[in-house]
Length: 325
Image (cartoon, rainbow, N blue to C red; front, side, top):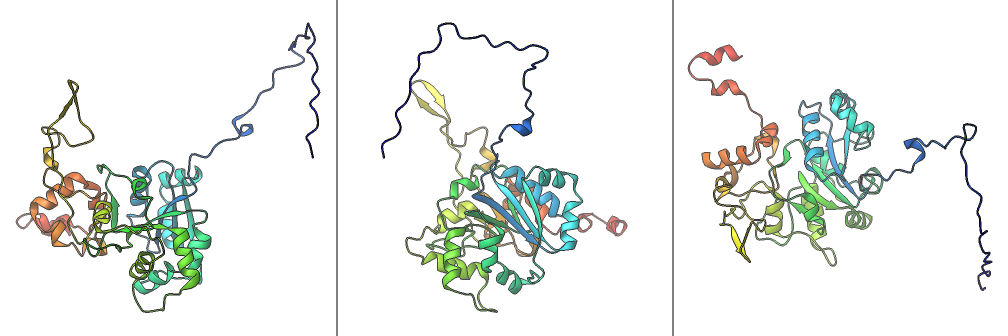
């Protein structure tokens, strides 16, 4: 059906003036009356699941909030004890009120106590089809993982992949540790609608990464990409400091390290983040095995110390250590 014809009228030659008097004040709008565009991207969500009331929960979550790109939101799933612990932080409550952070309980019929129960939780359809909706990219991090504020990379640079985590095989085509991992939710939902992980079998990250690696038109990150994302067992390519470049008589950096400014980085591996395992109980020699490696990590990513089980008393010389009990 044809649209109705438009009726066109010539405007009056002398349109009446609009006069606002004391009896007709200008309308006043509050910020609540103006539609606000959310600063957050609902397709991107970082997730921490932790039932233990660890003292690191608030500082770790706040650090991830500060380092992630600003449009990411964070979801914390915990027990009554861990929710109380993290909610004791005034800064955490500020982010929760602003909608940047959501604090929710782990369902009563689910558990995250021990590796097997964590694997069951992270392969449960409820998590991907309900808890994190409408997220498409899910950054899973644990209490023994860290993103480095000094990194030249950010998580958004890896959004083209279905799974990224510290690689088990640096020359492999897919697969990586789930303790600090980026997951494409829609792919995982499809996998879980067609397959179910058997209890007491492979860890959740091995099970999911293998299926995503063989998914039709898979975009699982290979070993070299995964090494740039997270370091755990294997060292990646060392950084190289270069001279300033010259172009049309102008010196420019071209997004590379500069000799004289970044020399401390030269020859060292710098992933975007680290996953250690067991609060630093398992530190692999390829990354942590020499004093100079550890010194560099503590300069490049000093915040990683938050995740390590450290006691200064053991480093106090002489007999003074007994006074540190």
